[in-house]
Amino acid sequence: MDGHGSLGNIGLLQDKLKRLNVAPEPLDYALMVFAGDNGVSRENLSYYEPMSSCSIVVGHLTGRSPTARLMQRLNREEWIVDVGLARDIPIASERLITGFKAVQGTGNILEGPALSREQVVKSLQAGEATVEMLVERGKSALGLGEIGVGNTLSAYALTVELLGLPPSRVVGWGSDNRGDLYEHRLRLVTSIARRQKDSSRHVLSALEEVGSSEIIAMAGAVLGACRLNVPVMLDGFVSAVAALAAYHLDEGSARVLIAPTLTRERAHPGVLNELGLTPLLNLNMGYGEGLAAGLGLFLLEMANDFRTKQDLCSCKEN
Image 1 (cartoon, helix red, strand yellow):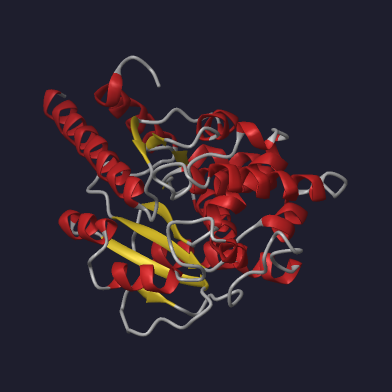
Image 2 (cartoon, one colour):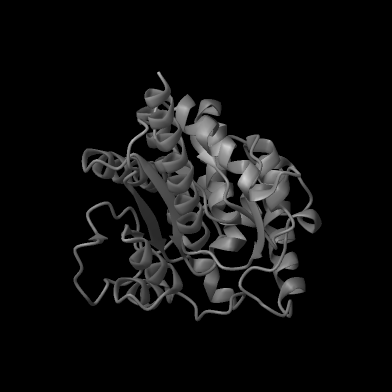
């Protein structure tokens, strides 16, 4: 992070908006939170119960989650996209998208491939289709988030594969606040890395083997946003790994990305560095679900408001 701090980074955000030709007018943005379940969660490596992502989604849709409360305060939309939940969501909501489902929970990456190639492609398409839908609704900036118990382990395994790093330099906290499960997670990722050692390093193969539907959907969203020239606010470590997967599919996709903050995950700075991104803040967050993306979008809105005022002042002077 540069020495100018968050206020200095307002200029970086303004430059990003100009480079992407975002009009200097009030910024309408939304948050996309992709949700899925992961078979590897049955290894009891998370603070949450295995295959319980649906209950977290309900907290978002009923306005009880920190992310939902933030977006309500900002008067902006949070969209939940069911791309891979094991169970149907028991409540209805106009902000719930169920038509892009790619899989009903992934396989356990310790036992074999998480997804088929067809499911990987459908997950990518789910992300792209969500971006297209929101852009058609007039959104000029989008944020990424994810709900998926166990998906941090997938993010670790993907980072090992895509950056060629040893597991000891990648595995971190996950949702474990005290670090009690660190050794367990490290053993699991090391085991997966050994299995993957002789496999193809193509990104689609890696996503089949150790991906998760919500990570892949976020990668698809980045690709869709790049095609439509829409700025994308990342969230935390898991969303950065999704952006890394997108980058391996299309290096040009990094141009639309913004990183709101560093997290406590040890591999997060390295992933952002690979993407050429400097985080706006360092909140040392250990919480995903789109919360940091929502905060970052508010900063982007503020930067755009400053840009609009500067343009108005320039017009008056001329």
